[in-house]
Length: 104
Image (cartoon, rainbow, N blue to C red):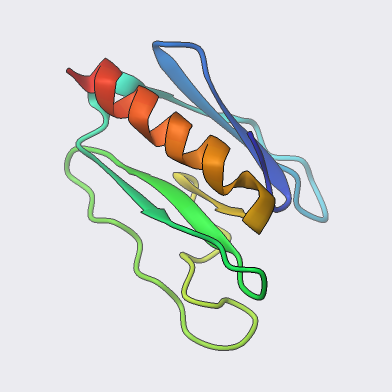
């Protein structure tokens, strides 16, 4: 699934978040679906981006930032989330459903 400045993929066992920020390219973040304790999804609107986020054991979900540029999304440095455009809402819902099913 294509997000804003990155992608999220799921192969049935591993979630891979690859961000493409300006500057040095960070390594993709790989998360085993069975390690995920929760998921968060905020639908994007035509004016504001939404996001998908995966919560891991021992961590709390990154809070939403306020302001016009962030638009209620987790900070871009959060490795377990990715902002999504309006056109990716349906794919994001399917991704979250697949991860939830794999979690058992």
